[in-house]
Length: 247
Ligand code: SAH
Image 1 (cartoon, rainbow, N blue to C red):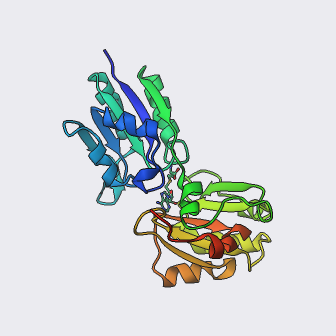
Image 2: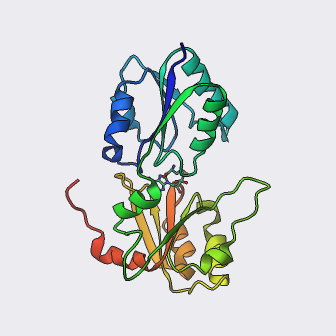
């Protein structure tokens, strides 16, 4: 009898931000296949006898190829195990969870998705940045800064024209180009902007600057992935909403 795979969202970083359903699933797992972005504290919730597969390792800077990850999931399930595929944020927001679900379906393996809080929303909140606000943003747009080779480049000039909050994931390697392309597309150079690194964890750091100065400010502060880039008037609310409240 085949086992089953649960694609579980681990939330943005703070282990307390995983769902109740996801945690119950993790506590009942026989194999856990996890990514680099998953807080290691969460792995302690799995039964000690559980198998652990770290597929976030970058041996010689080459990430484990996706087909190999799919195969690990399929093999574990074919051995009859209850498999938790633990992914940062929400499993279907970038990070290729949907491709894993497709591969499992094609292999005839039962698969269930347990959503998580995406860093695109929860990570900003942890930095005191609300993704919407009636006076400042009535929409938000979440895009990736990193596209597969051969894909159409992101149409930054079109994104620049949207009045809502713009959130860029996986954009740190291109931060300078992204900011320049947005300004080139008509986004005002003074638009409040920020980079949030290691959001919702004790390592969280935020740098905030007008769009035209964001890349310089982020570079000067030594920021790097994983980080969220956010552009929009809501960033100015951070002054009021960022607080070190009870954890
Ligand atoms: N599925 C995930 C996103 C995977 S893509 C989600 O829903 O959040 C990976 C990117 O997410 C990173 O490059 C970074 O831009 C962002 N990210 C995820 N966790 C983060 C965190 N704790 N702090 C800042 N950025 C984070």
